[in-house]
Image 1: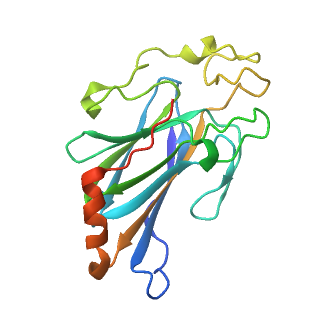
Image 2: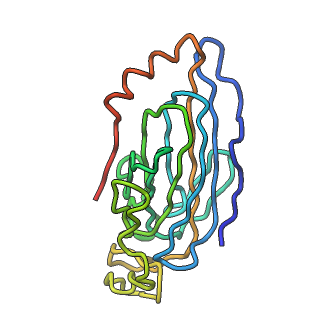
Length: 206
């Protein structure tokens, strides 16, 4: 079961002249099985530059300044718009995320998108339970295949929540932690984000 730590928390006004007000959400909890997908609702009051990242694989500090322990599963983030259409998905953040102290892998997810205002659904899943797309209604690749990560070749394999790094420490926990930070422009600078919406940037890995 998941714990929703903070929803739509207004952090602080940006410095004078920065032209944006940041919003942040932090979600954390556990999956009941490695084929489960957790869904979270987000609302953007206007166009925004949005960064989504997990901190649970390698551990770190969340958007609210809390400490997140390492050891969570290899996460996937997928974001769907108001119509349920997939607008972005990421598995491994690579150079944008820290390496895990035991596996050395950079398996936390990281995604940066320019989005219009509106309602969105964020999905959190275990690799390689990818969203099939193009819509949320199309489901996820591993639904109904509980325990599928036991076949990933992890030397300390357990019934669920293993990754594919192939080294000690690849047996993981069911925990996840996700930050969503949105930079909402003030009205005078909102037009600066509207152009890039036509060429939505989506970072995909794996």
